[in-house]
Image 1 (tube, rainbow, N blue to C red):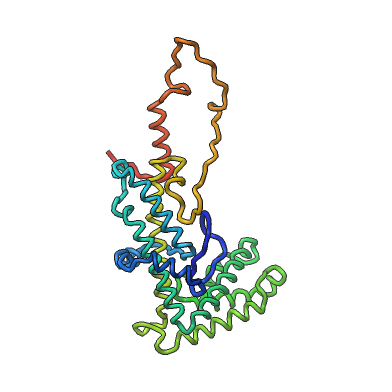
Image 2: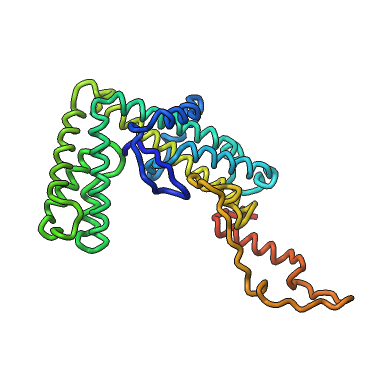
Length: 319
């Protein structure tokens, strides 16, 4: 995947720009934030991740600041968090350092992108691959292609960019007549993808581009590592959010903001039917019945907490 950092609010999206095209201020911000010792600390955990790895398409500086704010909020009640099942306090405490390690990993991609003789070509190939793949998936949703055909046209991971591009070229050419007038991908686009993929394949085979007799250059390794750091951060931040959900309930995002949230989320309070109901004035000397509005109902509060724990996914310890 290409080296990408985007400025977004509230999640993935926004207008991406390649790391190779970052301005001096963007790079300086990452350099000030990045931590090589943190990179070394988390490298083995990032490499050992199981399951799919997410592409890093984020504003890393924003992720760092939101992570630090969330950690400060949650660990202000450390004694409460320590009682939650499956929560490692040390991992939560180290989350800001993990975000700094991600910044350093992104800078390595920046360095290798600039040093590589095929950096701009690689970036172009990635852009074209995404365009064809997203179009193919949309056409499959509309039943013009089958999901199996789309899945067979590309692989997983970062190391077969050329294969993905050529597989998608073959897919669009095979169904060219059926897709005519239905697809934003033109025959000229398909030809360009093929041309760029062939040029990239020639460069990947050039002597000196690989490491340990591999055709995969350093850029691939750096990009994969960066995305593993991002995936590790999102997974551990999810644990932090769950702790925040236990502590702060519906106001969790005010205290543990999403990684790409620019502003605190203000929740509009919608009154319940009971709260909307007109309240009868209380006569002097008359006590309210137990459990009515205005009294503290311990059992109801406990049930609410238990339901919330189930909703956010906590495992209850067996007795």
